[in-house]
Image 1 (cartoon, rainbow, N blue to C red):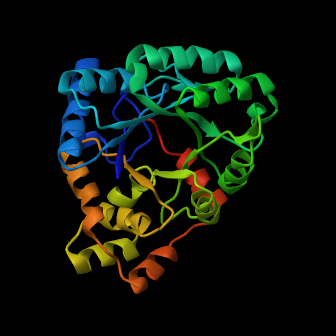
Image 2 (cartoon, one colour):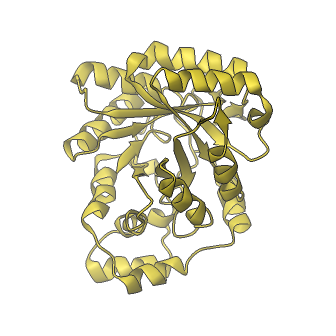
Length: 306
C-alpha cells in the first residue's frame, strides 16, 4: 500500500470523515504537522510509496520537508501535473483547482515540482486524463513527456469519471518514437465503482504499474459503509475501511493501493487490510455493491469541499 496526500496538503477536500481527524485550525503549520505524523506512521508500518500532486495545495512542499528532515532514501515519490491549486488556502473558496493539459502547464508545473522534490521524483502523472483530452493531439506535449521518460522518470496518468476504461485503453496505446509513452496508470476503483477493473487488468498484463486511488470512495465506505461492508467487518472484528481496502488488495492487477488517511488511527486501520484475506463469498458479496458508473460519479460530484 501507499499513501496519498490529497486530503492533507490543503485545508479543504471532498473526503468524508476528515473533520474530527484533522487539526481544529487548519493553518499551514498545523496541516504540515498532521502530514508529517501520518507519513511517520505510514513509513514505520512499511509504506514506501507516497503520492502527491501540484493541485494538492502544499503536499509536495510538506513531503519534501519531511524527506529532508527524515532522510529516507527508499521511498517512491509520485506526483501529478495538470491541475493548479487556486484555493488560496481557504476552505470556502469558490474554486479550488483549475485543469489544463497543455505544454506550458506541464513545463511550469514540472519546474515547480522539481524545485521542491528535486531528483526524488520517480513518477510524474497527467492529472485526471480523459479520453477527449487535447493531450492526445498535442505532438509537442507528447514529445516533452517522452523526454521526461528518457531522463528516467516514469510517466503516467490518472483517471476519473464514468469513462475511465476508455481513457486507460486509449492512453496506454500512445507511442512516441515507437515506444509506449505511459508506464503507470492511477485510477479510481472501489466496491462501489468497479467499471475500470477490466481495463486495469489489461494495463497490468501489458506491464504498466497500476495504482488504485479513492479505494474508500472519498471516505464514504469508511464513514457511511453499506450494510454488506458492515456485516463483513463485524464478522471479522474489523473496521469498514479495512474490509473495503482488502477487497482491492485481492485484485491481482492492483500493484499499489493508496490510503487517503489523515490521521495515525486511520493509517493504522487502512494498512490493516494488508493482513486480511477475504473469502470468495465475501468478495462476491462486496462486488454486488457496484453502482452504475454515472450514478457513482454524480454522487461524488455532489460531495462538498470542507
